[in-house]
Image (cartoon, rainbow, N blue to C red):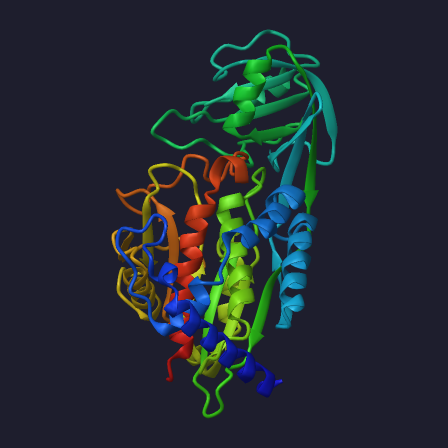
Length: 445
């Protein structure tokens, strides 16, 4: 197996030389601000990564599977898919289980459409209810009788008892929504908190659901709620050893999270990072390296980085010390127009092995003007590694004004391929992370 890997790697380097003699390989790349100045090791990566192939995986994750809620059957389907892809690439694949909190979920059926949302644990669970929707705005004024109606409450003020009052007045179910206006992003589904329990289902719906219900006018809705307990989520890990013989030089990790929030198909967040990881696993699998390559797809990131924290917490000190760098990819393909900055995000804003390699790759590929940072930012799976003293950073397309400028469809049902994914930006992300991770993997400790 080692001899076969070395031969394959040698063939890849020979192919890189051929690519280097091709003037087209040295032409300015689409969307780049400058002409490239590629190193020999860049060619077998940037010449082979294909956003088109990554998009094939993204269609499975975001369209065929859809929402991927940590610990539920939907996430397990995604786990099985990504593990199968990595096994087919001949990696050593393991699934790492860990317990996660209960989930409170719901569905709404409106005509031929079914929408997914959150449910309140303070409302009725495991039940189905239906009725005509009545728009009560923020609940400041309620009718005397709501028997058999599905109450829609939007932007309910803090301290309001409108949800409790609607249930008391006979509502069959209560839909709670939040609507924001530009420049704020749209709101997603959620699990409403109440000050008391009620005997009817209470759902937290996304802004797009509110907009569609209001556009439909008098319409009948069927809702159901579910409480899922005793849940297990999984990290999916795939590894191949270094190809050059000699002393242990450690491991380089390329990572993303494959779960999504309730109600969202998670095409950009973080289906895009997941499929980037799968495509780089395909391209890098036979290339010669001094360091091992490990690809990790985290479960239950959206619940508080649970998967990556579990992984890091169980690492022995010697295993943690072997990790040369963690390239975390979260939201790497948005099509949102203003998201023209590719951000290098370390927890403390400092430079480390991963940010330095991505910045250098951006300069070599001609994307130096698009790459911003490093700047301080947490909120993704690089955080547990940083806390353990491991070089790690998150990489993401966002607005020029700062990494807080996320696309408006973040965490919403509209985070779809059609509405929120750019294959061109995905291609750039693939080239930058691929070139950077491969350079670090080729480096001796």
